[in-house]
Length: 217
Image (cartoon, rainbow, N blue to C red; front, side, top):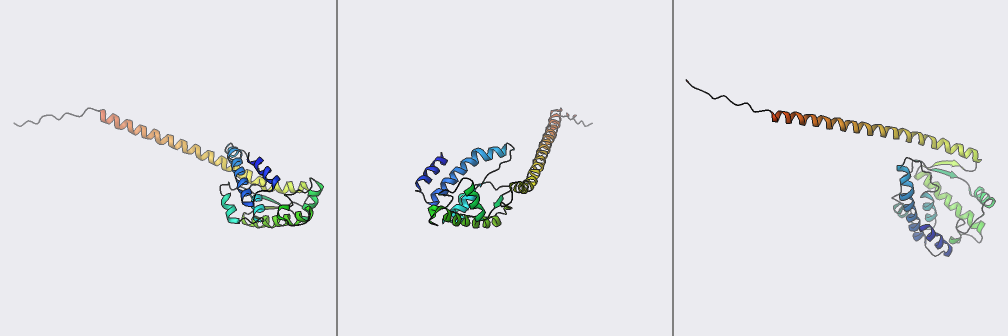
């Protein structure tokens, strides 16, 4: 529902950056609650393209306060790993032209940065890259050179993701072992408490010795 609202708003170019941010945050909250968190609880690995960081970059360059953006998306789960596929503007522009082509929003035409799509695209994407570079330091992104061939990029991503997966498996095993030990300990303590209670009950049910009368002669 929110996705359709965002698309309709884009068509009319009728909302300011703050309203767009709140719409994106609402859409993300819905995905987080109904897709991401349930998948994580079920033991799945969740891969998310862009996550919240693209929203940060897009709206900072449009004038939103950085701290306000962080507060709005403060409910987001901190990822185990963020891979930043960094590329320069010229290479990016060439790839976009060779693939799907440039559009109004990816060129930042709403910001009136240039007289045509290409000129505006390069200026806008340059501003975004500057923001992503800042976030790479702030949030410790793993930077991957996206100008390299796809095979090399994939290898670089695998090299960064695999240790996270192995660490996660180790943590899950350790957590399961800890939970099992806790259950066994609780059961042992319960059994000991019940045994102690039985002893007290047995002792209290024993007849009280009757004192023999004292005689004097």
